[in-house]
Amino acid sequence: MRISIITETWPPEVNGVALTVHGLAHGLALRGHTVQVVRPRQSQIESPDTAVTTLAVRGAALPRYPGLRFGLPCRRQLQRDWSQAPPDAIYIATEGPLGMSAMSAAKSLGIPVCTGFHTRFDDYLKHYGLGWLTSVAVAHLRRFHNRAAATLVPTRELAHELKQLGIGNVRLLRRAVDTSLFHPRHRDTMLRQAWGVGDDDPVAIYVGRIAPEKNLDLAVQAFRKMQARVPTARYVWVGDGPARAELAAKNPDFIFVGTQLGGDLARHYASADLFLFPSLTETFGNVTLEAMASGLAVVAFDRGAAHEHIANGIGGMRVPANEPQAFIGATFALGVDAVLRGAMRQNARMAVASLAPDAVIADFESLLLRLAQEKTHGHSAVAARI
Image (cartoon, rainbow, N blue to C red; front, side, top):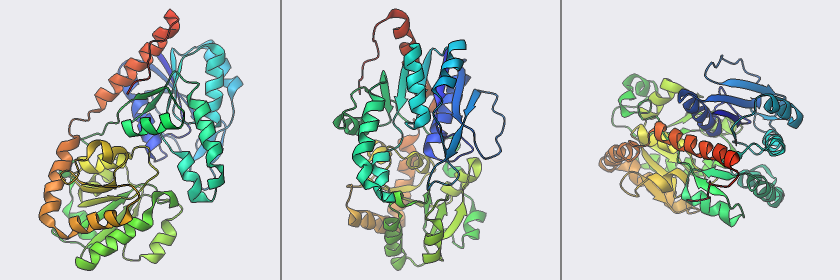
């Protein structure tokens, strides 16, 4: 097939959407499909990507998200390109101006479309003083996704939430994790020594965007409670974002290592002991699977990846959403009990060992093929099912 994937974000940008879409595109290319990626031009120096073809369009900086861009409207450009080389199916990963242009262009040309729901922008707004726009955002998301043949989500929980918002064409596409890259064997004694900890000192780690919507104050409170009992505990922060400078100024003992990728990221995960994930705004949380594959005991709210993949009290600690004291208590319990922590680390790894990327790509490929067949045969075969 010839497949076009539309996304506002793409590596070297580092976020869950960019990495997920990159994995889907390259997975399809490896299976013999011709994959076009439509995305904004990036400010970073880009490495050549021979696996996919790229159509770079005009973009602008995303407010309050330094380093990220969004695509500007380009319906006519897409119509010209797709008229000359029509895709069999289109996947739109983001709902911004670029995604809207792609939806309109595809509809005008009769090309089947599915969308992905990766980010709860309606939840993000309140963290940036824009909560009054929530109803507008929800209306846009509903209108946009209901124009697609299917909207792909990573969890049954999110599917239920979207149906309550009035998005009715939801289909499950599970997320995968590279269990060969993220593995406990990458634990690095030298790295732990650089952090100033011994073999038995608990290290908590955070991986992701250091930003207000991530509920990071709760992670700090939980760690401080644990550290009061285990003074040798340390907290390592991987990533960057608008809240980093203030967080570092208030917590001079925290270790900030910036953005880490590939093997370096795997080494940082595996060299820690606990993964504290306090966010309530995630649609999934890829980092949860990466931490589990790396053999970390996870504390997270009972949502997204944690809800789907953590057996509570066995492979990690799932706490009820919006119960911060339960999150603090779970962190304390794991931080002070090395035996419990060790057992959960082993169980976490086993819980995600079967989440192979190939299976997810095959499911994605199958859905796109059915979309293309619907166009050929003139009837709808992709039912919204979970």
